[in-house]
Length: 328
Image 1 (cartoon, rainbow, N blue to C red):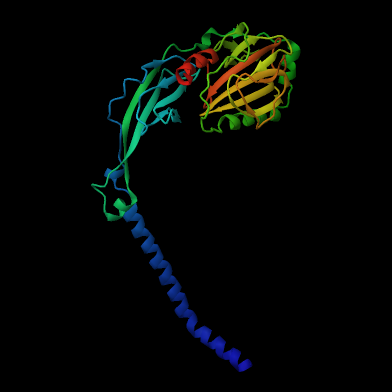
Image 2 (image 1 turned 180 degrees about the vertical axis):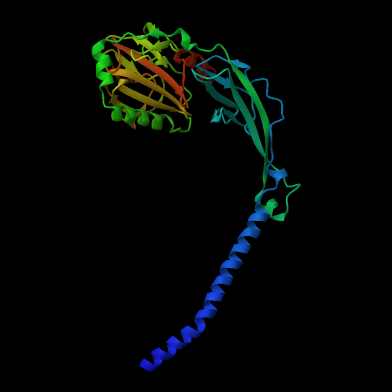
């Protein structure tokens, strides 16, 4: 048995150099083959060129006010539109598109529209097999007008007890809540519902959208929603069909409900005394979701109501008017 083991070891020792050389040759051959396939399949400069020399369609607005939704109509379904890298929401099988200008945008935003075409004329046999695409389209600057002015800010009146409570709140908790909200608003779902929207409460506006404010610590900001007068425990209803993606008590916004309406569209309801829905629940337009209150950073009971498109706050009442073009 020992002689057999010795013979096997001797054979392995004789074959070892050959096996090492064979393995090295195999690795080299595989590397060369991979490089050749990569070079053949990689599109040339001509085929991968992106051109934006086409004329922008007339349906694209030349200016949009700060904090406003807008609809672009009549473009073919082959287009993809982006506004400052945010993809516009396709509507009605991509024939119409929905976008928005935020409340703190600069003087202009850039809208690009492009489509992909299959071009085999300058492709080799392998590229033809892969259906190499070219990208072409248009680019247009949209003026933001009128703009909101932060220099017209007014002091936000808060009871000292409320402000001291907020200032002394754990900073880690506030950062954690901001991250939760960012994650919720960045999770875009497909737009399925096209029913019209209605305000969550028929009441007087006590603070308009976009109003510039100054906090007691000197920080300036724009009011990102609409404040509606509401006594404590007034029923609040969803402005449209959607799914509840956040229902919790938070430091600044108090009792908070966020509803996902699809396509990057969300509605937010702040300072609630009572939350009557759970996360993951499908909500119908007009369904009661809770009771108004004075929780969080407030100077009295009211409802703070917001409409968000892909992270950009827009005027809720103007959003409802613009949405009427879609819901029919």
